[in-house]
Length: 292
Image 1 (spheres, one colour):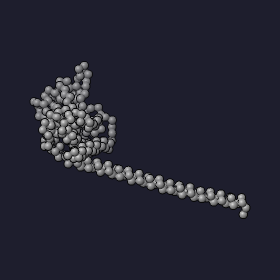
Image 2: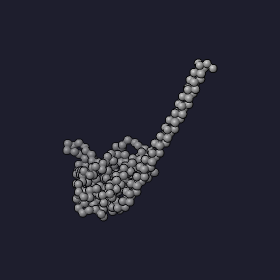
Image 3: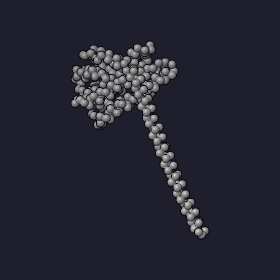
């Protein structure tokens, strides 16, 4: 065999070796990629399980606090008609009625009326600290539970609670209880929406007040998160509001509907909000335990 042949054989052998090397490297790279992907999937699965577990723990913790919230709400009596005095329900008032509420809590929570209160009186009506004389009210508008589930009432931030309350001992406790109240009513709303899908006529809630402004233009007062949830959980309050309006010749009409969303989207929206509230309440409770 000549030198040229031997060189050719060497080149072919080297090329074959290089090809095998490439194949081996490619196989190794594929295995590495597969292992990395499997690792990422496992990590994502563990993260998802951890998040779901945290969510379940948060909801379980919040549900343990539901009893006092629901008992408090069940004890709420609707306005007596005809109206002789102002009837009021506020998130601060509910928290102040907690059996372990510190003294003077009611006064400290008064600023929360701007975030959650319903007032129905012989002379005025209002939501969240914004009252209007009956003589200026032109109509009361209603929305279905499904509409409230996807409305702007969820534009709520826990920082709003903190900034409303003075920096005194017990503020974190009060904020935690506020979140528990909202959570209990959100769970109730979620259950009502699921039940409403099986009914022909969904429940409507009086949640918007249209009234004349200073220059005769119509203005609108709408419920915030607490007020909307309270009217859903306590339909007798909304019924009394509508009856009081009727007594004064104020029409009660359906509001212009929001864009249509599916039943699944409505339930999912409320469920996400419920999980977010539960997580915030659980986080605050854990922080309290660490500080204790």
